[in-house]
Figure 1 (cartoon, rainbow, N blue to C red):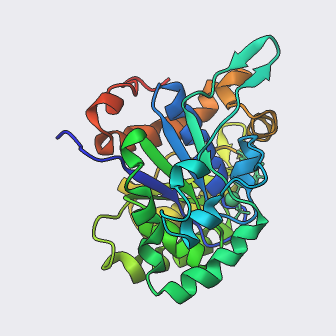
Figure 2 (figure 1 turned 120 degrees about the horizontal axis):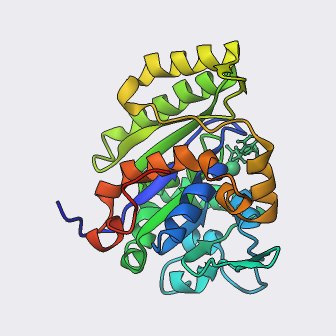
Length: 285
Ligand SMILES: Nc1ncnc2c1ncn2[C@@H]1O[C@H](COP(=O)(O)OP(=O)(O)OP(=O)(O)O)[C@@H](O)[C@H]1O
Ligand SMILES: [Mg+2]
């Protein structure tokens, strides 16, 4: 069925370091490489995504703070959209011309107070994005790790939710708490759907997972069922290097490390408008 609107995907996780920003970043970069215009939203005052994308917030330029706390009359959302700069890697230019970002800085924390007093924080980001959404093939939101109003407005903006969770005991606990959050608000968000769970930083020794990785992935599968389990992201310095150099593992000659991201893109494909869905290769490499 042909989709007529741009989906918003949100990486959710109610603990720090679960891979929310990494999965948002890698998925957006992959889709951008396929030719799909991607709008990232950095909804975390820690601003990891803004820094991972190499965007410097200019003085007197609105950020997500103004977008979620002011009306369109006062702050035009288009004025908050920054292009993601291209990156030079060795003699190669990594073209980021399909990538855009509404950035955050640490001032975004203040948005929580305004959102709390609004009484409708769940829908504010979704409503603000609506007029510009059709300019993009997908919108990807990276929320903060705690149960804040910024996390709620991120959740409410999402048509598709993905939960990255570290492949250890803390990750399983984070998954349980995140599913509770989704359950709490699901009836108010009938358009929202959980796409899947991505085990993050899975540790392998040779051809076997470590015991902690194996048992935690099994526990996650028991909680959400096998249909919602996506392939894991391996623990690897290649991701860290890719993040630091502002590129993808495939730019560093390791496309295999993006397998999980490619499977996630396939799951998202039916939600994309046809002109964009057809840009995602059917073959996963
Ligand atoms: N595959 C990997 N293996 C090892 N480390 C990784 C991998 N991918 C990302 N990292 C590192 O893990 C850290 C945590 O990841 P990330 O920032 O994506 O988590 P997060 O859930 O967004 O955290 P926060 O809750 O603080 O926003 C990052 O510093 C990143 O560099
Ligand atoms: Mg993060």
